[in-house]
Image (cartoon, rainbow, N blue to C red; front, side, top):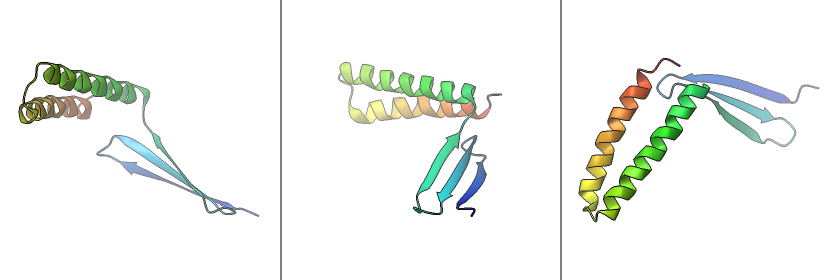
Length: 87
């Protein structure tokens, strides 16, 4: 007897594909995001860079509002570069 259901959906804004599977016996739902390797690497690089930027501003004792704006500005540029990237 067939006991699993699967579905795949495309999320164009996140540049990835989500896959879902439902186990018919236990009712457990499995979810996995299928992201191309270059996009995943760029995402990890951006995450590290933004964290380092925040830590550097915090170490220089900048006000949190100034640090948030600086990191947000850098993050918006990073998001644009990720959206225009060819995987």
